[in-house]
Image 1 (cartoon, rainbow, N blue to C red):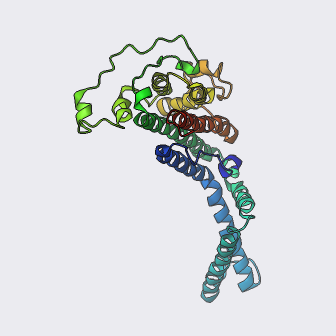
Image 2 (cartoon, rainbow, N blue to C red; image 1 turned 135 degrees about the vertical axis):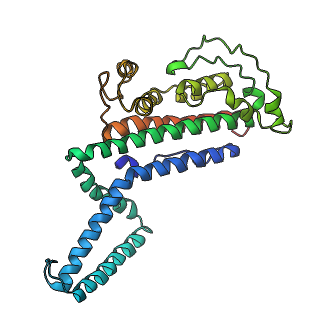
Image 3 (spheres, rainbow, N blue to C red; image 1 turned 90 degrees about the horizontal axis):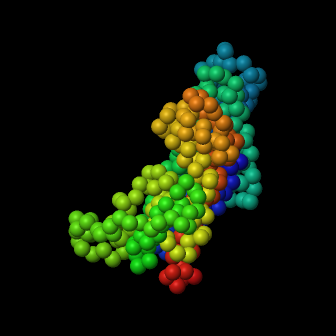
Length: 324
C-alpha cells in the first residue's frame, strides 16, 4: 500500500513535445494501476466508516448498542442520523484534501482499511481471491510497459526517421538483457511494401515508425529489445541501460507464467530463478505464491526502468533535433 500510495515519479513533461501523449498514457495507466492496488484498502476503509457511523447512530438514538428490538421510528431516525454523520465525514475529507495534511491522512486511511484484507489472508477460502489480485497487478503492469514501449518506439521513428528508420543497429545486441556490441546488423531487406505506403496516401513523412512497427514483435521482451537495438544504432547507451534492465526480465517471466501457464512454474521459469534473484522461488509444477513484498519487488524497478526508457528516448530525440 505504501508503494501504491506514494508518487511513482513518472516523466511528465518531455522535451520532445510529440512524446507528450506517450508520457500522458504511461502516467495515466500507472495511475489506474495504483488505484487498482488501493481498491481493497479503500473498500475496507469505507466499510469501517459505515459500520462505525451506524453504531454511533444507534447509540445516539437509543442510548445503547442493541438493534434487535428497534421500533420503525427508531430505525428511520438511525438511518437519517447515519447519513448525516457520513456526510460530515465526507465534508471533512474534502476540506483536508485542500491542505498539506491530505497526503498523510489519505495514507493512514488506506492502512486502516487493510485490516479486513489482511484478515482474509488467514481464511483458506479467500487465498485464491488474494492471489488473483496480486497476479492482476503484475500482468497489468507488464501490459502498461509493453504498450508504452511500442508506442514510444513508433513515435521516435515518426519524429526522427532519418537516423532511426534505416534500422542499421545490431538487432540482437540487447537480447536477453545482455549488451552484445558485436552483434551483426540486420540483414533483412529494408524495402517497404507498397500497400503499407498506400495506407498513408503515399505521404510517409512522419509515418515511418507506424509503417515499420509491424516488423517487430512488441508482445515479447525480446521483440521490444530487438526493435530498439535495430533503430537506435548510435548514442544509445542510456536507452540500452533502460531496456536491458533485469527487472524487465523478471516481471516478464512472472507475467508469462501467469498468463500462459496458469501461474504454474515450468522448467524455463525455474531456470530463470537461478539468474534473476527477484523471482519468487518455485519448483516445476508449483503454483507461484505472491504477496505484497514480491509484487513490489517485481513491479517497482520494472516501472522505473520503463520510465527511464521514456526519459532516455526523450533525451536522444532532443539532442538529435537540437532541442536539448
